[in-house]
Image (cartoon, rainbow, N blue to C red; front, top):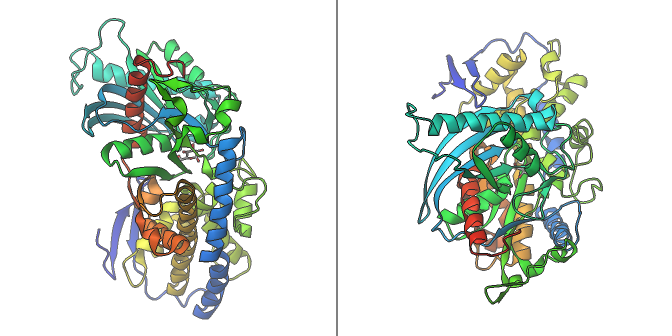
Length: 512
Ligand code: GLC
């Protein structure tokens, strides 16, 4: 919709809700609003709190590099640097039909992926939104739901003469290889198993942490007679790394900026010191030292600076977000960056100004007082509002929170959104810079496959990451370019399932 300066209109939010927009011109005198000067003074305070200087960024990068190194050398570190048992890059020649399921932060997705070789593929998929109850009930029940949904998908697409089906048929007793994207930290000692270290992104299903989620899912698949073989358990970042490289071989790193925030990259096996402690000896492969091989690492960098809080600039709003979360102390980096938290940070600032009597005097503000009601999509909409009067911002505050705003307040909210999201993008740049610097990619440059709602939908997020990389590295920072990644949890998962099948059939680490 194109917004006119005056009048009414509507816009559909990413959540599916419709937001009515209307202009008011003469209500600004009715209520005791803050003056333009007061808002400008407040903004200055927040600018100081939320601005990251290049010098500070470089300090964060140094600490980040040390943390990544430590995670590679020693088991059970805060940033766990998880070996994924995805050995090297895909050849691009992987072919065949694969199923992929994806349990992410918001949805459960089932995909049928046909890999056609030479970087080409086709995909058929269904998505289910997860309810808050499902995220917190018994873990086995959650996996039962996933297995049932997969069964329905297979019956629909592979059944007899199914209308709209894909035309695929399974022979009696035949099973399809399945890639399971489970986007939470799991420690793995082989590709098709993984013990959940901790839930992140607000999940809290019981009886799951510390358990092998691969085994739990297998149990549910057997219970529902689903004709699949769970071939690989993967993280969304690892899938994104492999899928992006499949279509663009200059990709060396993958990042997700969505409900959560994380990265994966390809490491030399010889530099993963802790493999020996884990009892994994890669030995010799086809006459080559196994140590000359590469393996993808799922960093789980969202945990950077957790518990100790030594390196990241946290404001009191960030501390409240952390302390009121279901996992205080954890995911310190993620809580400053990911889509799950940015709206909440802004809401806490607004609430403080309400309590101080600066904003919305004489108005009923109870709707703003509920945690997490201020969606990160609102920040994104506020920043993309093209109108002089900020009609979109009027609409958000009046429609969702039943409060009226003046132009000065709306400009202030928009400026705040920019501060919070810019800090997130610059911190993201620090994480990318740490991997680039550790791996020595800066001179030759590389592509970074990036995915997630924040990266894909937030206006200017990618540009702000690129600016941040120049602040860290100087002009050479321009050698590092992020681009929208291929669908890692669907296509990436299928490619990894294919690579694993090929690797094991060739007798390369058949037990890993
Ligand atoms: C959280 C998860 C991580 C995932 C990321 C993006 O950080 O712990 O596994 O990759 O979110 O979805």
